[in-house]
Image (cartoon, rainbow, N blue to C red):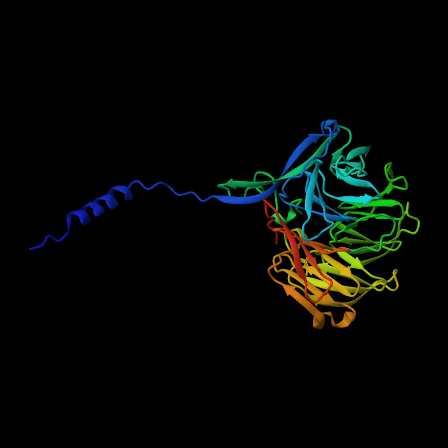
Length: 418
């Protein structure tokens, strides 16, 4: 008669009995993406000597900017990459300017303007291989500054793992937010020798003046002498300001509740003409002589707004009116080149439209490149430059109905966004 259990079966059962009485208690853990506050002394920041460094790989690019044959790519809070883009199929990474706290930039003639936490810096680009800091305008971006102590508050992307499901709420552990809120969080009609920024830009140049917006304020600088920018004054805009776009002598300012139109014909003192209001949503804008094209996007950082393209009639700048709206998936930045509109749809891809008939834009979609995740773009003179979580790509758009990829600059730390 065969035994009921084999030796190996008995050994297995014995192991189960022994170890079942020794199982550790399992604790749940929670992971949060947050922005932790960091306090700095601005005097320490100013004491650092800023010199051009050799080219560095793109880690997590933010804003993009075109000037002549150069492409400037911001590395949020770290500095600016400079690339020779004379051949968009083979851009050459030239150098890196380390600028702590940098988020935005603009170029006027041979002068690059960039924010350095609370200061505005001006760099001489005459020798692209030896860029020099020529002026610092202190204490102008004061929204993060305690002037009495000279202390500034900034934030650092941080991943926190904890056993508390209510971290940041019960104990004040930090500012809990979606990763889309991180710092890595237009082919304009500007004349003169200005460069071109994307639709997410917070710096713009027009009529010998630099305009810089933050969450609530537009700051005006006189740059008639490009190397000697002078702060003129702040202009209160109300809360939720996000972007600025120049057209002729007007400024179109996107906020999360609407679009502001300012008359800058007296460039040192722009005056409000109108505010077009919509549901609360992220809001970049580009314009032509008749219409403003505004994308609305929902998400944690944009509350609970709609995902739409809105076409606003601006023939009467004092009374902008909604012409028509079109559903979108999750639009971010956009760019206008003649009758052709390009929209970055976040994780969903890149779209292009013929907008000559604004009442039938949805019937005139040219392409939807679902593989091209994208957050902002610039229709430049040589290429359509698109920035996304995986890098900075350029397209030949001479045929707007069939974009042809020319090159891509990969990044080492792809952005996660919604």
